[in-house]
View 1 (cartoon, rainbow, N blue to C red):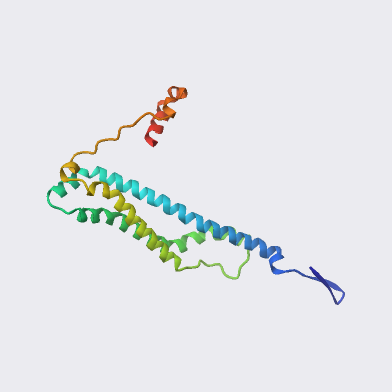
View 2: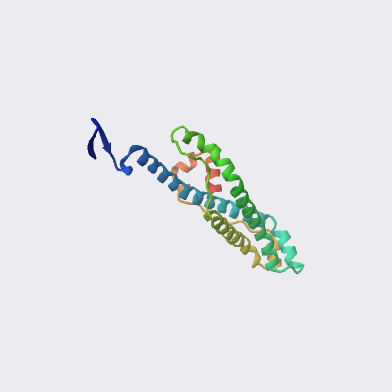
Length: 196
């Protein structure tokens, strides 16, 4: 800090980065950037897990139909393309819808609390080319996840695909061998086994 005497008054010159209004705002921007980096990744992972679960259940539920289609001469590639298109269309349309509606909805949620604390000349959402790259990346991942879900049945013979899938044999785990296991309620044990 440097002090200068100007017409009987003291004036202090402070570096811009040391001024409270600047560094507090810079810290806030850094926190928002960090959140902007983490949230999309978490939401993408959750969306892909939901897509994988949904596609696996659809394919398991429609095993007989898939087997009949295979027996009638439909190629594996045709069946695979059909099920991959589910995930592709849903993810692409949802991403485009989010790209359009996001800038209209999100600012209305966050701006009122920020306007009460900070003063900026303009409050408006920004647009970035990385949004398009993210949509392309999510779409590619959705194709991969959908392909993974359908690959289990696409390689089966028609005679095997027509039959219902044999349920996996569940073995007792470490938790089920503990003394406390028998004291747990039926619902807790059921939920544990279902989650396992």
